[in-house]
Length: 234
Figure 1: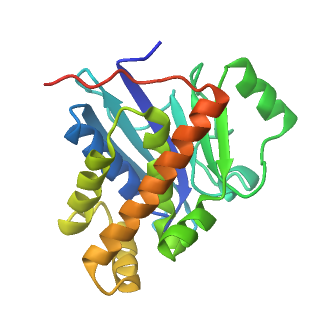
Figure 2: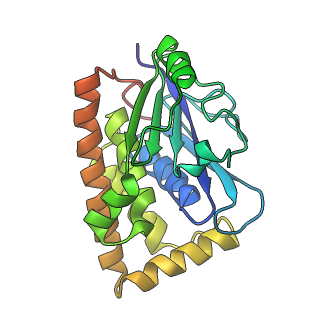
């Protein structure tokens, strides 16, 4: 049964763009008529240091902020979140709700038999894919990994349109938004990778769109049902 709101936890490493992805996710959801908020959690602001970002999306007003303790979806941006415990929440799936979803950016299966049993008992579906390689194939750079993860998220939800995702990406990169010095540095690096900002935006759109389609198809194959209610006008 679809819910009126969901919570998303995004454990990542510094420099991977999880903060940006959470911001775009909330903006895209808002564009399509949802209530949505995002917020980051930082430790040391340096590359490869643990970081977490959170997004909340719903058809009802959202009042809570801060850390997501009981997520519906967990998105693992780097294998070291699991293999080296580079996360503020361990195990990485702690608190995940029944019928939830885990998306892992990895080229290998990182789950132990114990992990699999716990998640199976909760009917949590797990999508493991090398989204960094996917981003390189689509955009020519690993810096678009966060866009691939973003597309996977919305491909799984199925209730936020690609046009809304496009608006979210354009809003992020055509306006000045800085959550921290780290995200500003990452944005600068991304922009230098592409000579023109619109080229950057199109590459990100293409990557998110392709990941959206891939994940939507995967959901059909594994029987992952719609998690979030369709948006209402507010």
